[in-house]
Image (cartoon, rainbow, N blue to C red):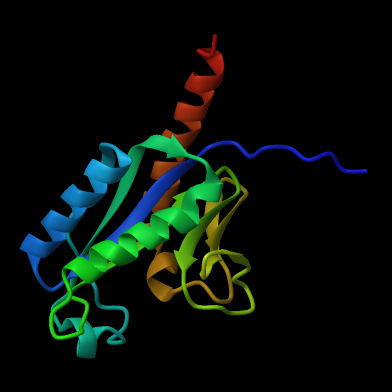
Length: 180
């Protein structure tokens, strides 16, 4: 018989992209006010892997990846995604998103993104939110899967996520060693 265990806290991350650097910065500020200070923010990265968002959000999109200093429980992911949906709604113009926020988390084993879209590799969590298994950690690195978005499979992105995971491992070890 397996015994239920509670998961370790996880490292909250997010991708944020927009055609407006001002909106991008405002969005990141809102997220850091809600979820705590950032411990990583990437350089601006052109969002060039797909034109899927061009009709709604425009062209010349730029993106930043961020991670937060505070660790969270993985079961808070639906609440986080619902909050980020509200932030996206706050900046909508003419029923179009001008900022896209994709929250998720890094654990020891994987990178999970939150989504409102069901698919075979996306188990339902709750409140209309699904968990997208995006990357798995095997043999000292994150590895993409058959369905992983091309940008998340990029070698430079994998290196970035490996570095964020290393911060996470250090945090969890420090917390374990410094609990009363």
